[in-house]
Image (cartoon, rainbow, N blue to C red; front, side):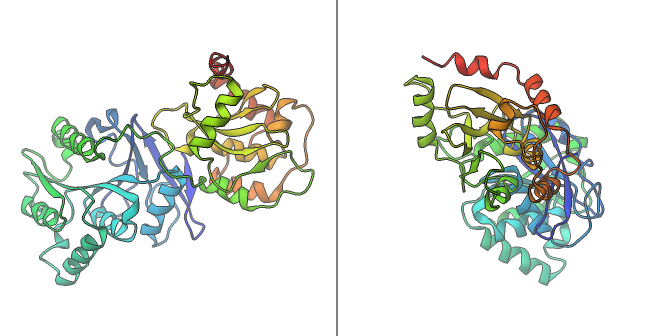
Length: 375
């Protein structure tokens, strides 16, 4: 199960299922792990569901810093802004996250959010009102209620939606506390259509890289480290390369004025000018799940690793892009990079030849696809 590291060092797990744009889903109720919502009544056919194990559940460690955990997961996934869905008691967490990080939330779906948040406890109600104001006027919010839910009642969804300038309510007749189980088709249609409407007007489908230039956390930590001289012929950037610079370089490399390299996010280079980056080959997947590839200055092409965690373990064993081209002998390991790899891809250590071999087997047509663009 994939995992990420919270700001306090706790290792937290998450589940990813489905295809399409990512939808970050917070399971509700005490000690409920990320497996609980399943595929959300078929919503996974329209969205890639990212469901964390909250602290103390599933494979996650314990603690009490859940807003920071959500932000750490967003950063780990390399997403600039997220669509956020929360069930039951997790609704309060989602609203608090939106209040503290309004610039990171594109839309908010609150499914049968807890009734005690409004009306029953004035202190809790004030917290929701303050959080709703802090979330800002631009966040579209959908409050979903089950028509047969005995608590929270459908009127509570309307009250929650009323806190937000762009709030709206959907009551699903015949559904209770878990509407994706009671009315899966209506739930999927209602939530999926809302998410589609909430995309910015005129926006093109968002790719897995998001719009930001921040390096995924594992790469950012490696970039902050000083590799010993002579360790590897590889230099990390401080951020993902600007798409315009990528387009210019890619046209030079391929000799094709129509190629723009939009499917790549470069983050480093070797001494003679070869580029290393993420290839957005897995549609709708976050950056850490994308393969890492190398474009050599003499025309070499190589898939280095099937995902970012594997690439970190490759670096930890002293194998950079140039070393991988003629891999034969063991290299000097990098203990500090190994610590970073263990935090971001725990238990993922494998021999370099296995990492390289698996990447080539999984993406055998990389070189053919790039050569087809060359002129």
